[in-house]
Image (cartoon, rainbow, N blue to C red):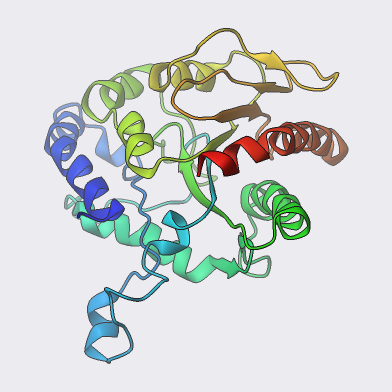
Length: 286
């Protein structure tokens, strides 16, 4: 049976040639970061570790079992990649495996496993997306799992709703409509990523209301109804999305938005409360 990462590799390779040709034809590569490819592989340099007799790839639980064996799997979505892989100086086209390796190495270096799940290393990463938002939600859920569901675990995958990002002085930013149209036509991979990775929960840090990123969500997922309010908060700030492809889905502000930390946490607590209300059903399904 193919691993998740092998299935993702095949998905990306099927789309890769057409995307790269479009970026070349339209003279866009020097304006964009490399496309954002994800992986479920936790050990990036397998061949080296095998040569050093430090790894039995078939049995090592850190391969993909950290994700596949979890009782609840969450996929967190940011907006677009920021300060990610760039084309080299001669604009040589990178290999799919090289870009997936970047993601795998990032997990190896920054994601710390825990008996109830995992979290990002607070000392290594400065990004609020990881330190404040993803870690904050994961820590609350792991505490709940340890208290109420001992032996049950949570895992996460980090993704971006836009696979393309403009090169900016700050390190990355949204692409214009023409670039997004190329991505949508030639590299529409998120629905298949969901099918392969089978997350139970999606959490989108893509901003308030029906913005551009919300339209990207609608392009990738089937909405079965209207967004629902949580607690007494505005659907502009936090909402439950009726996405058919997964059990639970939520959308709220990006962690770098100008609202206060308290406002962010009001939104997160509303999401956490709804997850806790439904957690029994999630675990029964497993």
